Length: 187
Image 1 (cartoon, rainbow, N blue to C red):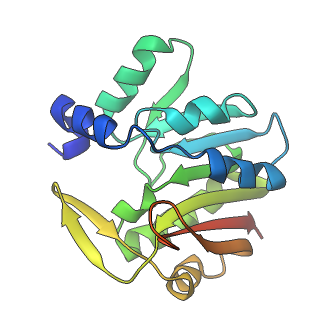
Image 2: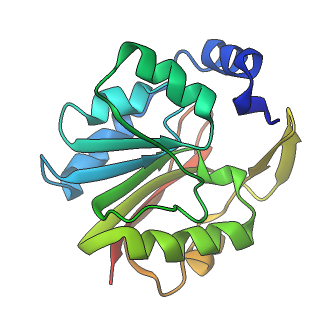
C-alpha cells in the first residue's frame, strides 16, 4: 500500500501542501484552452486545482488513489471522478486537454514516455496537454515515492514526436526556476 493510498499519508500531504495550488498555471492554460473545453486532470490529490479548473472547463478528475477520490467525492457528490493510473490511462473517452500539476514526476522516464503516447490517443483532434514538473537532474525517493526532476532538453526528448511543443518554460514555485511547465499540442 503506497503513501497516497493511506489516510495517514493523505492527511500529511494535505497539511504539507495546503498553500499550493495551480492558480498561476491555470492562468497560462487559459491562453491555450477555450472555456467549456473538456479536460482530464491526472492526479487530483485533494482537489485544489480541480476546484479552480471546474469554474472554466468541463472537468473529469482522476487519481490512482481511491482514498483521495473518496475524500473529494464526500463533499462533491456530482464530481466526475475516475481511478486511473497516469501511464496506461485506461479510459475510452476523449478530451480537449489533459492537465497535471506535479504528478507525472512520480513516473520513470520510460513510464512518462508511455504516458505521453497514451495521452495522445486520449486527446481529441488539436487537443493539448499541460503538465508541470520539478526542474533539475536528480532522482529522489521520499516516503516510498519516486521523484524525477527534469531539465527542458530531457523533457523534449521524452516527449519526442508525439506532440508539437507550444511552450516549455522554467518558472518559480518555491525557489527560483525550480519547476517547468509544458504546453503541447497533438500533431
